[in-house]
Image (tube, rainbow, N blue to C red; front, side, top):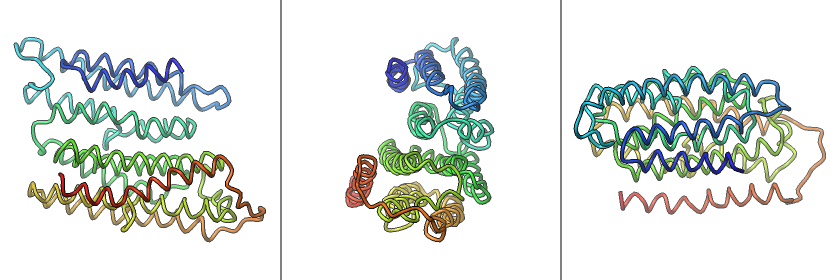
Length: 330
């Protein structure tokens, strides 16, 4: 409980700081709080995953500190005023911390070695502070555009041959990182809407997979006999892929509208193209839960886990009109 609290506090310090030094302190507090939570004595791979996570984050933090030192001779060294060369270095370190391609080399191995609960934290909460700090530090879209396109491409193509669902969720997250960086460039409110929708869908999927002890595609037959759960799973995966009329489509739609308003037509086209590729493996996972047969007995009882799945999916459905109406206020 103590580490969970300090994890939240570290993120809040980072996003509310008025100096880069305090932001760095918040990021380090966040890192040191997550490591004990990642350690699981029942999982022999968790120690290796924790070490890899620490080394990757420490490398990114070193670049961040190095860029902060460059800014020490500037009178106005606030978080809102930084020179271009320092901005590039800061962005590189933050992109590595959030796992954006091509700086994502550590993320698949880390996520595949930890529990579903830690997956949920790494793929959602741990992106908040780096994303907000990228918003503070970016000077132009020119530097970020290659990372946006590469993240979208790697996330789409990397998920095509995956049979491990944890790695599948990683590449899905990398694809969404490209969209989130684009969203936060257009406006902070667009990113907040996109990230909120992404987090709700992600939490719903991970909760479902964790509750049914599913880690690989060939275990999807566990869902084929559970019709309500199978329906929730299909709806959330297609929503995560951005298929209309699900909730995930509206977050992408609003982002596209914002990018076209800024006349970023080439970037928007690339994002849409790689999202269409990603929809293939989202559909592949979805149909796997339908086609695979199971010998397990039918279970239609809405026990406590199923209730929470229903709750999250109810929110997913109810937020669709809200997402549509948000377009008129952005």
